[in-house]
Length: 290
Image (cartoon, rainbow, N blue to C red):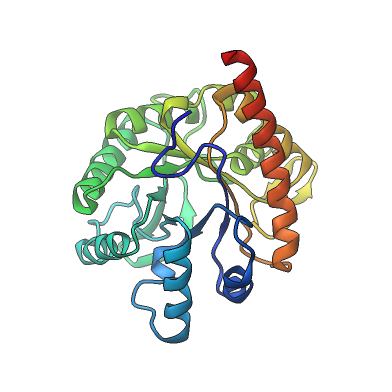
């Protein structure tokens, strides 16, 4: 399988966090294949931190995962932010840029949380136009991520409502963008909203999936999971990741950890599990091709 956006299908990466700058710079070659950075956290950063980021960006492929465009928001997109973002992505040679399929602002400003969109055709029209505007401004195709959410704005089966999977398919097709598939978010949402994670996974547009996220969550109750990115990846997420590879083939995969950061060696141990699943999927592809 060919590389996607400069990343090999069996690439395994880590989220770049400031607390890990030193250990990541000192890590032996091959410890990870790429890094993911939130551009809002690094644009305009200079001094020691900026030099460390620049060093890692020269040595490793960087993908960027945005936090604040508010693709589903109702206020106009921030043209100044988009211009700065384009300069930043071009300067570091970013191999892929993604954003959340959500809203994170209103007429009062940033909400500092990811709010779900109503899964209906009106929201499809709205977000498709904004994604196209972002792609034109950035001069590149982007990927959108399926988010975790705790309350649906429209009841499934209600008047005008779409299934979430159908909503995602329509958005990426009509916007002509790609999909960052978060496997942990599927497990979280399937538990909280009582649907089959395999049905959701198999309904995703495989030809649009550029890379994957895996992360840990918190089990608040048997029927409630909280998407924290603050714990090791759970067995249900590992199982669904393996099924993702079986169904779609190997894809670049990013291990997210935002809170309760362990030593880098522990994260590399989890990354070894990602690589084990990728290797098994690659062997399966080779057998089928023989």
